[in-house]
Length: 292
Image (cartoon, rainbow, N blue to C red; front, side, top):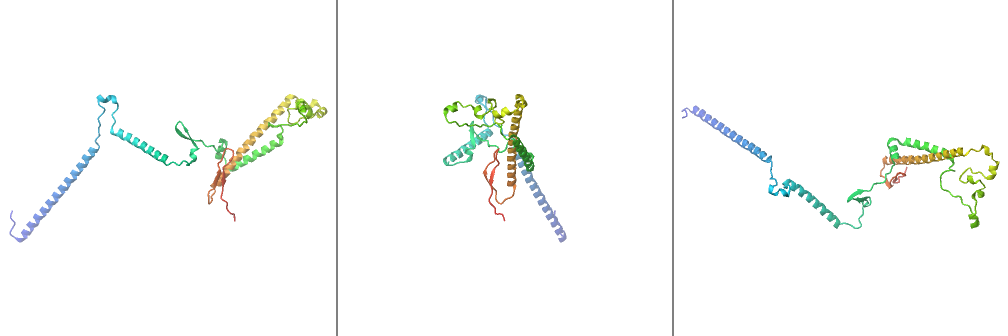
């Protein structure tokens, strides 16, 4: 195609040819970029397919079936990891044994023991009995103080009634004589000037001269006397239980008071002197503070 002769038409024809050329360049560039993108996409898909491909390992051949299961790589890796961990642990223990101080001491050395090749912690002595723990968890300090006051009043009342004269306790009555013959021939009933049947009594043991003045017809019979003695011993057992309960309440009260004091804010925490036991509260020492 030949361009027209006019100069105006020459300009229009040239601009049209240039625009077509630029359009072809844009189309070629876009096509090339699209081709590259598709190739990249296909490559990533191909690589993803390769990575998801199952890696198969052969099984144990029939000729070697008598040797057992054929170890795969994952089995070897687990076995090698376990072997290296144990090797590192042994190496560390060997190093600690070489650097051991013969005068080294830890409290855990005396607070643990070996049982069937394993370290077992020595059980610590419990600070509270189950009754004390139940009281401390369910009741408050004022209630325990009130119950302790009630128990102490009942103990005082029982002690005032019983006087602990006939309580079951070991005691001895020593008699002094001049010669050994007098000691062999000593008659205790005659020495105490009482009847032999009354020697087992620790109290209410009248003398013979007092027995002569008494009206024996008014004295209680043996059965009634035994009943009275049984009631007295029952009262002694009740007194013993109340004393033990009052002591438990006292220990629980002291432990709760100590916890209350430890919860209070102080500039420096106290130092524990002795741990608590079932029968005693823990002992703490506070830093002395000058009161203004």
